[in-house]
Image (cartoon, rainbow, N blue to C red; front, side, top):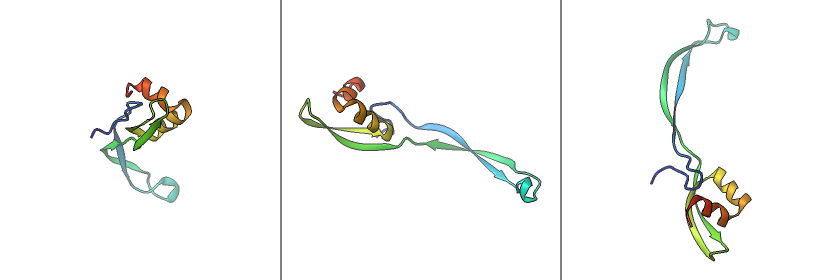
Length: 87
């Protein structure tokens, strides 16, 4: 399955990690130098949850981020899922 939140639409972000070598000047070296940039993927904090919707009297299974789970707690399950188009 795709690594995308069904509520917020957050997915995988591409980025770089910088490799450095050398000893810092304040530690007695000649300074840190960048040797290369390495590609990396920043993954969303996804959870698979069964959320009970009292208005429908049913459970709905969704794949969402931890941030979206806080949104569900704040705004209610029915309103959040309806705005996302899941019900």
